[in-house]
Amino acid sequence: MAKEKGRKLIAQNKKARHDYHIIDTYECGLVLTGTEVKSLRQGRASLADGFVQIDGHEAWLHHVHIPEYSQGTWTNHSARRRRKLLMHRAEIDKLESKSQETGHTIIPLALYFKDGRAKVEIALARGKKEYDKRQTLRERQDQREADKVMSAVRRRQQA
Image 1 (cartoon, helix red, strand yellow):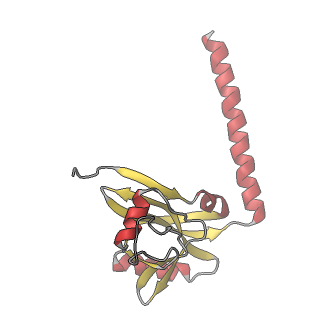
Image 2 (spheres, helix red, strand yellow):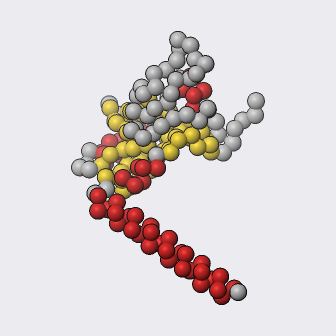
């Protein structure tokens, strides 16, 4: 079997970028069982309720849903079990100190295979207020309208 190359996205937490200000991102490995890997290779996972917690200088991923493998037997995994993250000690210590500040949390952004190994992208984030969310949407809409006008002007100039 040939080695996998590149990045294959499994799941993405799109709502996270809407609900949080992303401060810093990290790429981590995951400790998984065999049936979890097979289920991920089928492209089935959900990061919607996931978060990261630091316990005893170890990072743990909670509430990420990886459904049971359909051809699994009694060795199948539980769908929402906590999973250990593989990170450098310095990164864990930095995340631990920053996440203890008021309003900061650690959330998963994406779950993917990189060169055949399961990875998760986590982010140190601060929750947005409702007016921040509206402001972000307004800025995005204004940018879209400006791009539309600019492309119309360019089309007229080329004609």
